[in-house]
Length: 194
Image (cartoon, rainbow, N blue to C red):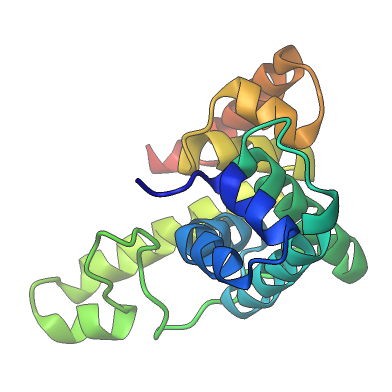
């Protein structure tokens, strides 16, 4: 039986470096995905994800298993993202034709270049899908950081309102309100694409 995330963090606290490797392996991809969706830039997301795990390592001596480990981890990731976004005062949306179209680790990753070369997709559909994807990402990026954070955690990471409330440190009702406001704004911004 594999140790829980909380048990691994307690092992790290006691000096077990291999426990940190296991924890990183378990959560790196999902944390990177969360950060990427929050900041909208792959290279920046990778840097911030590394920073998140460095901060996780440094926080191990003070770790107490009060909440779920993922709540603790996403709280660190959220703070790293907000600090960086405050520094740059904008939300970059640069992406490359060579970046994978999907962050889903169970999905065959195709880049836009491969997809166009493939022949299974028409250039017109590929351009339309790319444009729609870009508009959706722009719409999400234009949300306030509070609304964007709640939307990403609930929609992309499937977290409950309670889990999100623990991460953002606010009441569950506030999470529900922010999610509702985010969805309304996104519907309004994307209404022409329905």
